[in-house]
Image 1 (tube, rainbow, N blue to C red):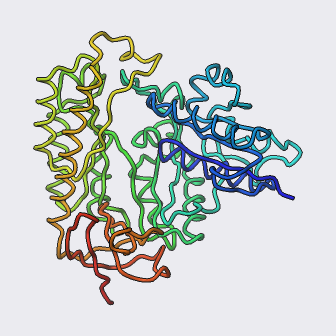
Image 2: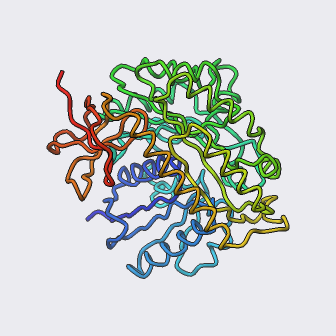
Image 3: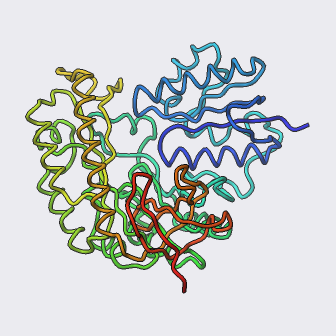
Length: 430
């Protein structure tokens, strides 16, 4: 009888990809993978440590797992385990704590007699994933780690210095996902725009890698995850704006619309640079989706800085925002700063920016009504309309009528109406 294993992943796309690597290796070692809420012999919490909440979530999930089956082995792996291993080892319900490099060897640590993954591992890439279970879109890790030291960020301690996956191994992973039927692949990394900087022998930066990967036979479309403002090159913009297999979507972190806050954050640009970049992208193609991260409540953020930041963001041609409340991370420069902002102020500033994001997203969608766009049909139905959810290349969620047989397919649709449930779309023939 197979032992049962359950995995839950917190945090970023990189963690989700590595969660798939863990799942695959456990299956290879004979484990049956079950949902995290079920009885299992092994529970793996693939953790995040970007915020205090993510740490609390990891601890809560580990305790719940042990209470579900006191005989189970409970593992906390990933970034929280990398940064705060002693805190986790002090929790009675946690049996094993593994950092980011160790977690990809979990199955072998539990069953060493089974040996390493077939074909070995590719540096920071880890083993090739055969399929991205339960997803129509697949994430492909191309880079890990970060050499920047933004004042608020714990990621360099959790992920280490920037390392790029060799391009031949990236291509192998993309080919594997295309062969498994994934209609879209998303290139991910801790600091994606630094791709290739540590591997001059390959002669490829991020734009060069994209230009190479779009030639993979059968690839329908390729999407980029977050790229830092100073790493959005002209050649990368040309690919996003004009290549038919590259999604018209850029997520470019801003963090604050106040120059004084950006300086305290140690961000390497100012609002003038960011604003010029955003307007350049919009002028290339107004249908490119441009998203940004915005953090509220950074230490010493005054009401005037908050208002200035809001006004700057409101004037940008953005399609959406990801809004975060600053969370002190021990060991970072910002955690030791005076002038920590009250939680109620963070909450109110977050609420205002989140409402602005909703308006930006709605305005972007309404400008595209009547347009014909390609979508990848995903595996969920919107509860109110019963329609299938789908994603346009420029990052709009569309609701499409049809049977489950459409899931995973690429369709051409016309956007017909924006509703509270989402954007209605009708399949187009031919």
